[in-house]
Image (cartoon, rainbow, N blue to C red; front, side):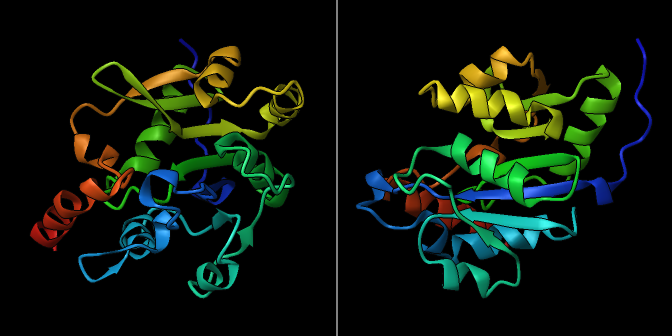
Amino acid sequence: MTTRHSIPDTDICALILAGGRGSRLGGQDKGLVTVAGRPVIEHLLERLRPQLETILVSANRNHARYAAYGYPVIKDLNPDFPGPLAGIAAGFDACRSDWLLCLPVDAPLLDAHYAQRMKAAVQDCDTDAVLATLNGRPEPVFCLLHRRHQPALLDYLAGGKRAVQGWLQEIGAQAVDFSDCPEQFINLNAEQDQPGLEARLQQQG
C-alpha cells in the first residue's frame, strides 16, 4: 500500500454544518440551543479550535450570531435548506484549502483527535475521501474530502440528489472506525436528547 505524503494541518479547513431547519427541535437552530449553560456551538468550538486553525461555519440563518465567534459564515447558494451536501458545496467554494473536514454543529462531544484521525486515515489508505463510522454504521456528515470531488458534488446536486451517504459511496469514500469514542456522535436531534447531552457535558466539564 502506498502512503501519501503528510498533509499539513494548514491545508485542511474545518466546516461546521449548521444550516439545517431543526425540524425535530421545533425549528430551533441547533447550534444556538443552550446546553449546560452555553450554546451547543461553543462546546463544539472548544474541542475543535485546538485541532485546526481554519474554520468555516455553514449557516442559513442567524448569521450575525455565528459570525460573533470570529469565523467566516457562509450560506447555501440555494436558499431552500437543501441539506448538508449544499453546505459542503458552499464550503468548497469558500475555502482556500485542498481538504475540507466536515462535522455537524450539534456534536458538542467531538473527539479531541477527530481531525488527526481522519487525516491519518487519508494518508494510510491513500485515498482522498473518508467518512467516520460507529460500529459499522456510517456517520456521513463526519467526513474529510479533497476538493477534487467538488465537480462531482455539484453534478450530484444538479441531478436533484441530496443523500450525503449516497454521494460518498459514489466517490468511493473509505470508512474510519470511531467505535472507541461513541460520544462524538451523540447529538441534538430532538428535545428529548437535551437532558442526556447536558448531563454528559456537565460530567466532562
